[in-house]
Image (cartoon, rainbow, N blue to C red; front, side, top):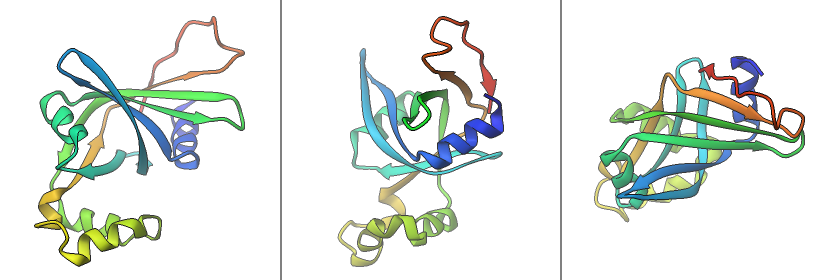
Amino acid sequence: MNKQEMLELMRSNPAFYLATVDGDQPRVRGMLLYKADENGLVFHSGTMKDVYAQISKNPKVECCFNDFKNGCQLRVRGQLEIVNDNALKDEIANHPSRAFLKPWKESGELADFYQTFAVFKMTDGIGVTWTMDTNFAPKVDVAL
């Protein structure tokens, strides 16, 4: 699978699992991808969440995407940066796929949306695919 095919797999299957480290313990949770393109992967969470503290302490993560229809798994490893760009935060919050964020932004329920909404970006990720057909083949790293 090449880079473009990997990006398309992520865009078509935006629910993924994110692995972080908490001390000496791995932590995995489901996340929702916002964007995957030539500029990297973008997703978000809240600063009050454990995942934010874990990424702040150790930004090395792995994401696992599954295309169950085609029997393919894609793991992407790399380092995250926290993006403090209010225009990007507005773009995400106003996107039709993120209607669940509107109350957070508009209600004032949290002290300050721009301070409590965390955007993560991975550039220079490395993708590796797995299928039953390639189960015993050597892994092939693909720069994303």
